[in-house]
Image 1 (cartoon, rainbow over the protein chains, first blue to last red):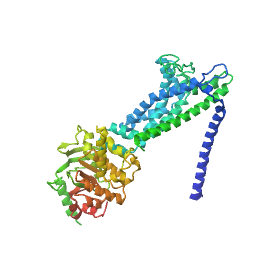
Image 2: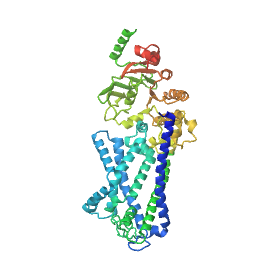
Image 3: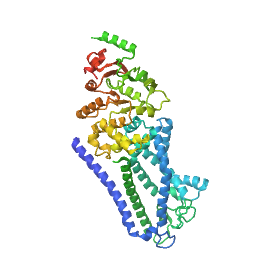
Length: 295
Length: 274
């Protein structure tokens, strides 16, 4: 029979051990990706278009596509998720309708992304005739992203105390004014964390895009910003292989001589881009929170 | 031992319904008629018929769960969507418990301060100014002036006048509660409802808050829920005693404390239970 003090020590010891193991695995993984990938990085690698058969291709187009797709997907899914979360948490009563919606969201969030991809292929690419395009990809990513984002925004709203809502109402604010002027500004940091997490998932997503945004990256003319031209970076109707899809493709069917190096380099770029996005979003979020709350 | 006496007094009370000392200098500003509050099917308040005098402090006392907070929150319709409130709440001749009343406008006339200080995650200045801005007060000078007057009335101005742009979340509990009072009076209400506003405060802050309330009654009619008998005795002109969802007694505070008509009130104010 252990006394409580030893018991406590053992518990703390094992928890430290588990936490250490997790950190170790993550560091090893990250270290491997960076060590094998960073040496491949160069300005040329980051900007040049990919080559199918020859050495020396870059990932410029794929990198751009990844960001463009991320932004489009977020532009579509964030407002919908925000609206849904506000409705579910602030307005809807707890009854069978909202329970059904919540269950549906939970089921959707555990849907394998390849299923989302196939659905996107059948519905957006074929049925709506959008073809392999950024738009199809963005819609598929919206489906992929919406449940988790809605859930995380709803959780963010939940962290704001009820007394804040009562405070707003007691001043004669409508519920909508209370939500937009009191609750949302206070929830910005927490909402932002959810957005960053889901953005990372979207940025690294491959399976849902293989069948929707396609696996080819036509060369882009970065001087042409007319979204109706096929080579314009802004054109949402062109097929657009992203970085994550590129990595998958090179590893499964890459025939260029330096496939291994490109794959390593691309992985490093992916990880670094997500990291960069993270820091930038946090910085902007802090500035925004400060402006909104003068905290 | 006063059981018989008690029952008679109680019956008399229930028959009379409204017990409110007439005072021509402080006419009734708010009154309830046949007020019932239901949570689902369960009745929380039965027949709270009370009249509240203007520019006076009325204390609502009673044991936990006696319905005093529920009653208070019904007065500015904060129980909408939470409970069903039937009966009339008359404010300046209008029944504000009607569905077609503009509750948002009404709550600007009947302000409320809560048990736990709830400053918004905004600057001290914006905590007070933003509700005014939403109602079209955009003139900087006018806003400055209202912020200053409200903070002065809430006795917070001297402590915060140099840090109006700092976050209100950094204020101490007592200061935060004063800010909430300042915020409530900035929209210029007639009536101020306070739900145990001092229960989260230390004795010094509590005593300052009581002084502030005594000042504020010159301009506002105050109804305060309190757990603290001494507080009710110190600041209020009238006291209503709640028990199990009913108003058992309503009279001048001195009368309630020195000569309660109902045994249970006597037990409560003398600290025998509650």
